[in-house]
Amino acid sequence: MLKFLPRRLAQLVPTLFLVSVIIFLLQQLLPGDPATVMAGEENDPVVIEQIRQQYHLDQPLPVQYLYWARGVLSGDLGESMRIKKPVAELIVEKLPVTLQLATMAMGFALLIGIPAGIVSAVKKGSSWDIGANVFALWGLSTPNFWLGIMLIFLFSVKLGWLPASGFVSPLEDLGQSLASTVMPAFVLGNAIAAVLMRHMRSAMLQAMSADYVRTARAKGLLETVVVMKHALRNALTPVITLGALEFGTLLSGAVLTEQVFSIPGFGKLIVDAVFNRDYQVVQGVVLVTATVYILLNLLADIAYVLVNPRLRG
Amino acid sequence: MRPDTGPHPVKTAIGPDPSVGVSATLSQPGPARRALRRLLARRAAVFGLAVVALMALLALAAPWIAPFDPLATSWKSVRKAPSLLHWFGTDEVGRDLFSRVIWGGRASMAAGLISVSIAVGIGVPLGMLAGYVGGLLDAAISRLTDAMLAIPFLILAIALAAFLGPSLGNAMIAIGVTATPIFVRLSRGQVLAVRAEEYVEAARAVGNPPARILLRHILPNILPPVIVQATLAIAAAIIAEASLSFLGLGQQPPSPSWGSMLNTAQRFLTQAPWMAVFPGLAIFITVLAFNLLGDGLRDALDPRSR
Image 1: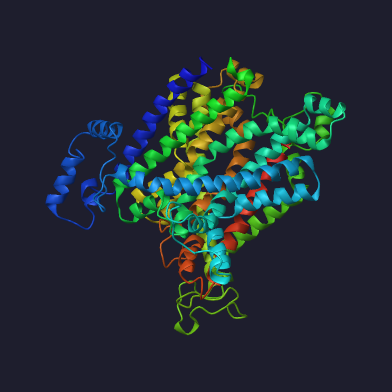
Image 2: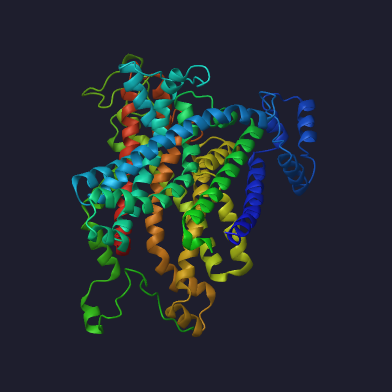
């Protein structure tokens, strides 16, 4: 672990640097003069000049990057052109909403994906196995925004059980908060449940054919004990760490889910910024997303090494 | 003329079995035919292949199959439920949804194929170079790949599409560029696995230049996993295109696209739910078919993965 951690941390530096370069260079894709495009409909030469000065757009590209990177390192992600607020402040405002949604979605994914994977592996070749595999294919092939629209039609329009859109903070009203997030969280968790089910099935099949499971069976233990205590305990660890890597899917999915359910979170922030041509916000959100994703990958790797004695070295 | 040993069959699961004698080899079908036989033996894969073929046919033959002009509005048929005249109903301006779903398939299939072609066209040569040349070039390409993979797929595609400007063409470029690192990583890994094989060593020993070795000896051997990944990537690209069009960053109205049709449908969910059902089903069936075909190809081209 002492050798692993510094090496893994050192690998982060070039990745984070290159991520920041890619995100910074996005601005260069804007057709024409970035300052004019960033000024939007306000075609005022004074505003354009102000933007050019503020973002050092009159400087060579590497110098512009250095100014931008220095700002980012000190927590300054720029200012929203439209809302006139610091991008970092906007992200901090919206992040808790998406985090609540993401946590609930991951809860759904674990609750559905893990048992489905176990049953599928234990009853390999049975109708349960076929059913679980069909479910996984369904989850992987359904666009989550369509699933969201269909669920709104069923549970909000037809049955009137759940609100079709909006978000209530759990601090205001816990019941309403759960009611407003249960559908989007299910939609978001659906695809991840499918991925987890496939991982779980594969890990369980591997564990079930291991020597220690054969030994446990030979000792005359009940099949439930063999599956739950011996096979599952060993199979679950890599699946949980792989689950952390699904965070990217979760964030990508949140963009569409929040749009369908009008949830004012992180995903909606980037979509609104795209439509308002608020490019600083787009860059800021992408940078924060990538950084969080990289750090979660690191945590998943550390967790994997910690629980796997052979890798501790 | 340089001596050439010719392309070698894949040294993985679909390669020749060294234990098989010459006479036996002559009487056996080639690896491609064996793979095809294995693919056709899987019912799910055959279903996927049939649906993909049908969808491609519908998209190509849209001008002859679609019963109505997908852009023609009719104020007399606004939001009509599915009927014998309009199989999928009509939309908020009276356009025939069946015709729009068929024409929308063109955008989706084109986006899937073109964006994955971009990703394969850039990713495979870069990955092969990184794996074969190694050293600083490999380090640079690999770090760039890691960095691109660190940004969630759709978020990067949205950002690229946003900065490039909303259009179907730009959405395809954004999806293609975003999917490129997967092919870089895959082909690099495959090249690393085969570059030390004896037939590559032999080709090098007889004086073949690196470009020839890469194209004639290595590329045919790394193609099977690339084909599998490309098939699965088309499924992901179709969803990504629909997502971008749903957000208004892909196909622009009034041109039909499954994603943008769903965007409009959301506003009329109470009055005309059929507007949301059929474009969504079209995406689901097409993506499912590509996923089934991809899984089947994986099993057929690499039986060890079963």
